[in-house]
Amino acid sequence: MSRAREPHPTPNRPTVTLPTPAAIGDAGRLLRAGRLVAFPTETVYGLGANALSATAVQRIFRAKGRPRSDPLIVHLASAEDLPRVARSTPAAARHLAAAHWPGPLTLVLPRAEAVPAIVSAGRETIAVRVPAHPVALALLAAAGRPIAAPSANRHGHVSPTRAIHVAEDLGDGVDLILDGGPTELGIESTVLDLTADPPEILRPGGVTFEMLRLSLPNVVQRALAFQDARSPGTAMRHYAPRARVLLFSDGVEGWARALATARDLVGRSESIAVLGPARLIDAAPRGAVALSWGSDDAEIARSLFALLRQADSEGVGSIVAVLPPSGGLRDAVRDRLTRAANGQVIASDLP
Ligand code: TXA
Ligand code: MG
Image (cartoon, rainbow, N blue to C red; front, side, top):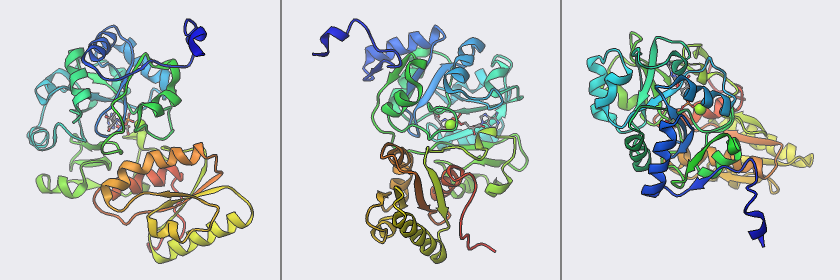
């Protein structure tokens, strides 16, 4: 039935393909030709372009609607390629790379001259990591050069953890999407600034503060409210679904207020979703869309972004959510949820 339509590919439909060796070869050629390829990593899907070409990188900013003031992460096939993008590699970087790469740790280092300034939004630094995903690594090998790749979502929207999320957000703004299935970790890499003294976590992520402290005892993690312009991508109003996010603290008071709010909204016939652990969802009023994020930290991180997108596809007006307690991978979840709620946490028990 759809056969008659095939000669006229619908605009806004990007090419999505399984990551066969042939497809990865094609994708590598596209990247070398300055085009955009979306690919899976262990964290979220990235929107890749040749990091050594200013024209190619410009396309990333255009496709995402991302301000030119927000720097990108460069992806490498191996830590051995670091000198291609970093002017110098301090001992701490070598140790951390040995311990965590391939993996969800991004290091901010002095930028090498070969990397066009647009990649790091004019900064003298460069953010870099080696992703732990076989498709990403095969693609980096096929491209044969460093690949700049932000998360493959429309700017400000929820990061993509599936190929379909990329297609929905970017349409034919991307030349090819490699579909590697749902991503394993589901939340972005930790961004660690090694040019700061002491070294500073600019964005909590897959490698936790507790893990970093083992090899870097003086590492600091800023409180959310103090995030500044050094890592613009961490600005408020990020990771935001269309629905309004009403976020409550993880204390007894927060849960009670979250449930009271949910009951009140349902009572006023508003369409809402409730997001949190199963124990919260069980107590939520009937009629609310249940977004249960599972029981262990890995499951919470893995499901968070897909659940926020699900709320939008169900068309709810508000999402009532609670924060998980702090610590470990939950710090990254707290960070993303707080930004989705534009920095507002209701009934915070903190003094
Ligand atoms: O897991 C990830 O990191 C994913 C996958 C695709 O690798 N990428 C990702 O990129 O999340 P993006 O562009 O969505 O987030 C990059 C973050 C932003 O917060 C940005 O401000 C920060 O890294 N960043 C990039 N370069 C920086 C630099 N030179 N100095 C400080 N922060 C930087
Ligand atoms: Mg992003």
